[in-house]
View 1 (spheres, helix red, strand yellow):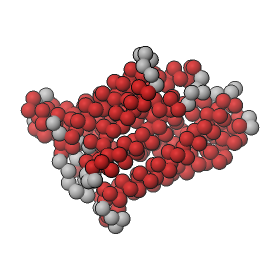
View 2: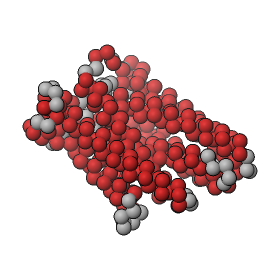
View 3: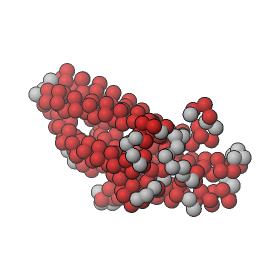
View 4: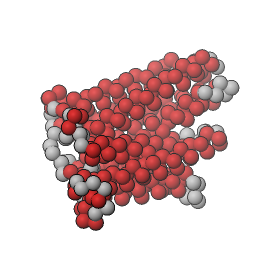
Length: 299
């Protein structure tokens, strides 16, 4: 599979990965900030900086996706990336709609991060706009369209919240002088994660079945096997999270500083697993074909 990649494929993969990292972190950091009012002022300020930085990264990656898709269609080097006809073709394709909606959502998230006088619901709106943009390309474009779109949006929101919570939780676990606050944050995330995990499992199973068409296709197609690799890493990630909740969090709540160190190392492993998931997802949606061939302007 990878030996046949063109330069356009590699650039498309890189831009999509940048868009994923930027968008998911911007969405997740925003949702975690809104869902955790007990965050101290310093951590909340740093989270807003994370939102702003990753929103810019997501915007740059998404804009690059647009230009690279145009260049790939013409296949005449950089000239194709600025060719008016090719750009218009991509603009009117699903990828164009997705990028437009995503950039709009990221601008709203940036406004939330900059604390421009807007209500908290503005952050939720930005998260929904950015997450729903992924339903206009790839997995969300099949039938039944509305169901797949809703499942993709739910999946993006859930995994983004999880990703957005990891960094502040790790920062809190590094503060051994305030274990009570760390324990409360970790316990609260454990309660939030129970809902997230359930939603992700249900959405993922339904999505996988609708995309592949049958359980058999999961083991007999290139796409299905790549998806299984992603699910294996997700399962490992959930096992780590369960370990955190069952072993380390109760110990932290009793004032055990060693438990905080163990939690920090476990979260570091979760972050690495999330990175692997994003890379596999980028490969899954860029290189590995869906069971049914899709228009290349889908992105």
